[in-house]
Length: 153
Image (tube, rainbow, N blue to C red):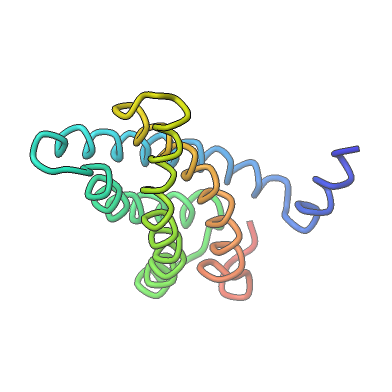
């Protein structure tokens, strides 16, 4: 039942590329969530809603880490660092804006549902990150590292 649906979504993606994306994506997700949690915790005593600043600061660092992982290990493109990094920024900028817009209401909902306002930013950040992973792959595959500018891997 799910196999034909999954195949229709991923059939055009070389299996080795999807596997590498998942491995790099796991690293990026862990690194991104770790930096989000770290910055949120470090800033908590200095500002209200530290999760907003934590999200923005971690995003700036994580974009470059993600870019290099995707460039070197997933899409394996050569050269064009500045151009592709700029495209990567464009893909992630949309994700950052959506994440920042959805984070406060998600924190509110999670806080209300769980009754744990201190844990809510961390849970909400994890929920939103999973959506951003899917959207970023599509953006990188079709725009940042578009196959007509890259070498086949």
